[in-house]
Image (tube, rainbow, N blue to C red; front, side, top):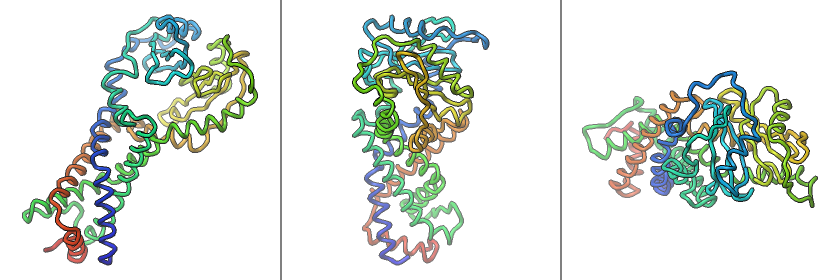
Length: 378
C-alpha cells in the first residue's frame, strides 16, 4: 500500500476504535451474563417438577382469570408458554398500551393453574443488565446510539484487518515479537486476538446493530401489514367483551398444524391491532422456533381473519436476535460465545493500552510501512 493509503486506514482504525471502545467494553461486560440469561432465569424461576407428558393444559380463559386476579384492576396484555418448563405466563397492565417496564407478570402451572412465585421480568439484576446493554435506559435513542457503536466497531475490525493483512503475508500466523519492546508485544497480541475473534466480532456487532432497530421495524410492520386489516374496522370502538382466548388459540393451531403457539397479544397492545387476538405461532426446532407466523383472530367473533406473512426484514431481525447471544446451539455454543466475548474484552483493553502508549501518527504509519515491507523486522 502507498503511505497515504496506510495513513488513511490507520486513522480510520484509530478513531473508530477510540469512539466505540468504552461502549464496546460495556456491551461485552454486560453481555457476558446475558449470554446465559436463560440458564440464570431457570435457576431463579420455578418450573414444574416432572410434568406429566400427557397432562392436559388448563383452559386459557381460566388461566387469564387467575392471573388478572393477582393484580386487581389490570387487564391482560400477553399470554405465553414455556413449553420446557410446563408453565404459562400472563402479562397484565393498567391499560392495553402499558409499556413493558410497567407490566406485571403472573406465572402459572400449565395444567393445574397453580400460581407460581416468580420474579417480574422487568425487575432485578438481569433486567438492569439487559437495559444497560440495549439502550442505556434511554429507550429508542439509546438503542440507536448503541447500534451506531456496533457499526463503528465493524468498521474498526475491517480497517484493522486491512492494516494487519500485509504484515501477515510475511509472517506465520500468530507471530508475537517478544523481547524487543512491551508496546510491540502488546501490539502483536492485540492483532492476533483480533484476527482470531474477527468473524465472531463482526457477526455479533452487526446483529447487535440490527437488533437496535427492532422497534422501528416492528412499528413499520404493524403500520403496513396489520394496518390493512385494521382499516376494515375503522370507526369501530375497541371491543370490551372478548371471544374465548382458548378457542382463538385452537383456531390458530388448526390453521398452522405444524407449529405451536409462542405467545398471544390482546387487542390494543400494538401487535395485532385493536380488534384481534394475535396468535404468534413458532416452529419446533432451534431455527424455526425463532420465525413467528402471526394468526389474526377476530376478538369479537373468534373467527380467523388472516395469516399475514412476516416481511423479510422482520425475519432477518428475528434470526439475528438469537444469533447475537448464541442461543441456537444451547449451552455449548453459549460457552463458546462467552469465551469469544472474553477475548474481545482483551482486544479492547490492549487497544486502550496501545493508545495510551501511542507515539505520533507518522511514527505509527512508518512502523506499519516497515512491517509490510520487511515482515516486522527492525
